[in-house]
Image (cartoon, rainbow, N blue to C red; front, side, top):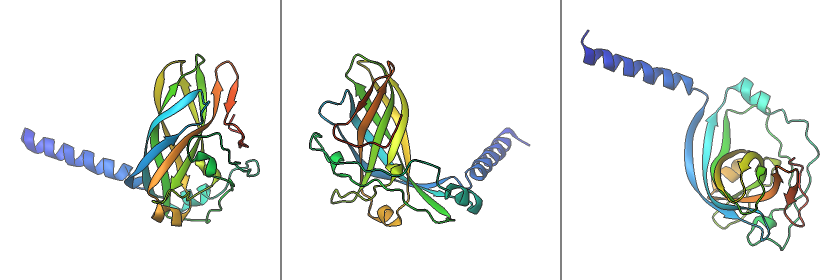
Length: 206
């Protein structure tokens, strides 16, 4: 067997193994518009973000396992405030969305957010609100799944990028989705102090 033919066979085998390993994994994606909103006094500023809608094919057993909700605290509301410079304050009524017992498809929002710590203290965790929106900038989902906790070490005066992801359970929202807004709602610092967005009742991140 000559070297060129052997190389082609090895490449074919590698491609086959990769295809097999992706069975039931991320199937397709769509890039979305993404922006950030910041409260005026927030010590860590969300400067830029990206977002994509990802469709995931799941096995029935896995889907059934995912359909069992965790034993979490009852849903609470995010109360709007006028102290924010953007639209993050408009999203009210965080409620747990019900899932069907079994599904063959899952939709996820996934993206990156670049954050600048303008304070002298080291931040070690962030609580984000991820808001899917339609083309008219209307919120499409108020699920608790929109709240994302990041273990994110950002030293004072530095900037870091972090990956986030959250499930999108509303099929209607998937069809209308055009853009995503990312806002920082709470920050935990290494000294134990916590910053929270003003006049917002938060579901406990930390």
